[in-house]
Amino acid sequence: MTSLLEVRDATKRFGGIVANEGVSLSVREGEIVGLIGPNGSGKTTLFNSIVGHHALDAGSIRFGGREITELRVPQIARLGLLRTFQQTRVFRGMTGIENMLASAPPEGTGLAVMFGRSQPREAARADDLLQFVGLYEKRHLRAGELSFGQQKLLEFAMALMRSPRMLLLDEPTAGINPTLINNLVDRLQRANAELGITLLVIEHNMPVIMRLARRLYCLAHGKILAEGAPEQVQRDPRVLEAYLGAA
Amino acid sequence: MSARGRGRILAALLLAATVAAPLVVPALTVQFATLWVMIILALTWDILGGQMGYNSFGNVVFFGVGMYASAIVQVGLFHDVGAYTAASGTGVYPFTPQQYYVGLALGILAAPIAAVAVAALLGTGMLGLRGHYFAIGTLGLGIAGGEFAASWEYVGGASGFLLPVFPGAYETRALFFYGLCAALGIVTFLVLRRLYAGRFGLALNAIRDDEDKAEALGHHTVRNKVLAWCVSAFFVGLAGAIFGNMNGLIEPREVAFSGATFGVWMVLMALLGGKGTLWGPVIGAIVFHVFKELFWTYLLGWQRVALGLLIVGIVLFFPLGLLGYARERWPSLFGRQAVEGAKR
Ligand SMILES: Nc1ncnc2c1ncn2[C@@H]1O[C@H](COP(=O)(O)OP(=O)(O)OP(=O)(O)O)[C@@H](O)[C@H]1O
Ligand SMILES: [Mg+2]
Image (cartoon, rainbow over all chains, first blue to last red; front, top):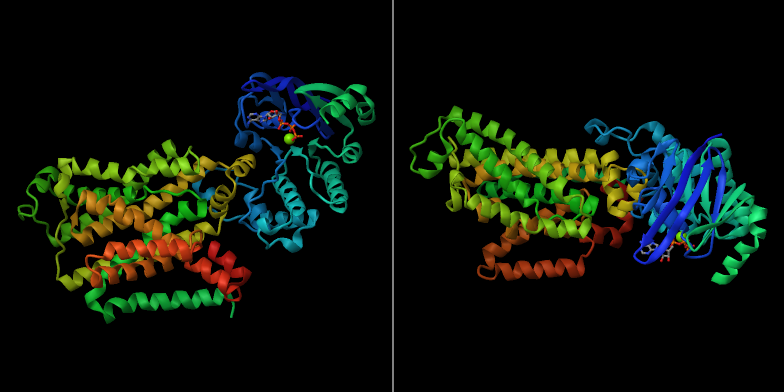
């Protein structure tokens, strides 16, 4: 099977810092792939490059067989490649429902569409997805009033709203209590299995990523250090050293 | 009673007051008409300032553009504009009543077109900027517009543009323009209410809360921002056309592009009432206008000081605006529904 996301030799520098250097990775349609690495190893930077947040210094990125290296954030999002943020970003002043409806921006750009009302089926889908992540009861609360963990769940539901082909999740379980974590992992697996959404997940929580991913990449100092089955990568002496060395 | 029911009653009362006001106190008809213009300015400032979180200090430009565009069309249809303004007020260029009304109608039609064109142009150039940079960029727009108009002899330069004279008695004239202002105010309110309740409202609020997130979700943010400014410009341009005619004389710096008066007032009114809400700017405009008129009548010489103190008072005691304050103080009066209802 061909890969859905293909990153080739991506290099990104910030002044003197080389955040990513010659990073290559590929994710096939329907896969769940993990991305691990010590703090500051360049994981978020790689996500930012993929979604068009900043330009690469070298390398290329393809999504769905299409060259997206030069595209900007909203364009890439509209192709069905969405990301969630490490710091969790929701529309804090808007209610849960409004957050969901705002996450399904209209496909068209005509005035009638942009000035139109949200469709009933969008509202129904918003309800379903809020139900799916367990936030239905809180749907009329402002997102800023939700707990941090609930905001993470909301952000995940928002990402699903547009039925993306692929999701990049930046530490989806960070700061969430263990019960909610199990919940979330279950939802991620179901999103993958039932909705067919391909996942690339940054995660520091080892048990979580071992459960989720069938393949792992490990970044250290901006370079891919190891790649393969989770158990194999976890036991790799270079990976252990990178984590211990960074500690 | 539900918040929605209360909103209905409030709307009905205001509508009754709208009809009754000029009949009960005919001497103040022009004042009431001006109040409607203020309401429109506050409502339309809030599209960007409140709903979208972009402070614009340049909306007064659309007011001036609408005024001049209308005037040029009204006169240009029947006379040479340059010669007309040069002969200012000498009565060499008369208008028949029919010419007056046809000109006015077409002028009022042209005003929003010109204003929207300017907004689209400025917006495409400036709305790629984020929040504060945009705000700073708009600071000079009013002054630039004023200086431009003041140096353009074709439209009367610094001495202004005298509009065709209304073919009727003073009272009729006042009522006529009051009707126009009130109708435009009500339409503006209803259109905005409708837009805020749909995708456009969601898109604006999303930009206000987190523009990066909106982009990450695939929003056409720049397009929405420019569109929002165009909606503002549309109604402000219309208001400018009507206000210019009601005023009779368009002064470039003091009336049309007056950043120090209308330009600042529209911001204050929205803040006073509660920005980011539908009713806030309306309430703010009413309270502000009443205070301002009282100051100008009873505190002559000190009116600007009093107005300044009022502004400080607003910022200190009502940082969320009157509506925001009331909501925090008496939440049961509004309830969750009201919070949503008012926002949309
Ligand atoms: N916009 C930026 N400007 C300058 N330096 C940056 C920028 N973004 C990231 N960096 C630097 O790039 C390096 C990699 O950062 P990045 O955020 O990608 O790490 P990470 O692997 O996501 O870490 P963590 O696990 O802590 O989230 C760091 O040294 C960081 O300081
Ligand atoms: Mg990170």
